[in-house]
Image 1 (cartoon, one colour):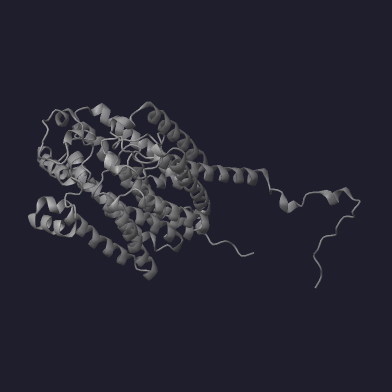
Image 2 (cartoon, rainbow, N blue to C red):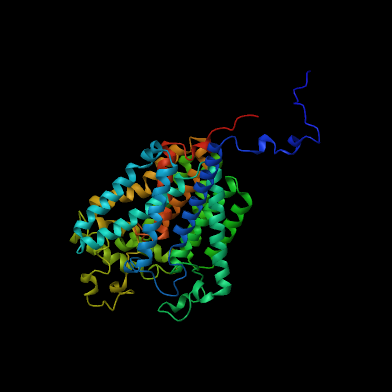
Length: 460
């Protein structure tokens, strides 16, 4: 066979010291594309880091943040700037055709309902500002998924960002434990010693770190095994130290249900297991407020059938629904409203509803806030439709790992929603991470997520 090797210059020839052509970019356009790709990945990881950390990390001990506490200057300026940066990046980096497809009907309906509910509010302008902030936060949330050029880029950037976030939390447990743990110097002194990390309360920390644990599992499967496993283990350990019993139970079940469907290649099995468990949890929680038989069953199965006094809050919220059954009380216009704050204290109840900021149940709050006409569609879009999207998304093998991560989050938040409320709640990490999973499934069901990674690499 004739050799195709090129003649080599003599050692004395100056050309022998030239950099090989293969080591140089093919063109300025290629170099620019590489830089743009790196910037896109960096922004994706940075966005995930900031949205999870928030602009007010480690706020000190206290109870759950109120709606007003998120409306401060730091958050307004911070998220407005973040939204502007990501909007510019999306318009500059992402193909306009992709951006058009990325505007999903699901989120158009969600925010149409939210803005419409402001008309029912006692202060429509304040409510509209809250919804607008929630909408602005959706821009970097979408950018986290749309900017990376491949799943590899997304996983690499995300794994680095979340691992850094978790390590910061562990460092603060040592360097400033009073900021990273609950202390006895608070109205909830019984939480002393429980970890809450960079968030305001263990009941928020536990589900957030549960989602980070799931993200670690995804990273381990999708190209970053060492970092992914480390993230999953560190996050799971953090959850165990929050003392949140319900979350500690919901986390492994959410992973198990999705794993069963993944291993058997039967996504409907995941959906079935999830649906059965959801009905059981719904019956034992809200059902125990409405039906004496279910209350007795709950009392038999659990040491605290009141769910730390939540049953009184659920009963009060349920009694308030008939006042505005169709359109609700309006966004951020029931809890902490002048009507509620002006009530006389009910000394027989476990909780004083005048100091409560949510119903501690996402489904009740959806009906109280948006009424049956708005609340039921929101519940369907967040907790039912994603499972149809999941069944469609896993048909594409390239989307499978990502879709399974997203449905883990949705399943977990379906259960967590029985105890907490988070929908369309400004920059609340629980809302943002849930929205990211729902939005991710919207995309994965209809288009190829991060298409460059989904095309088979050419043989060389």
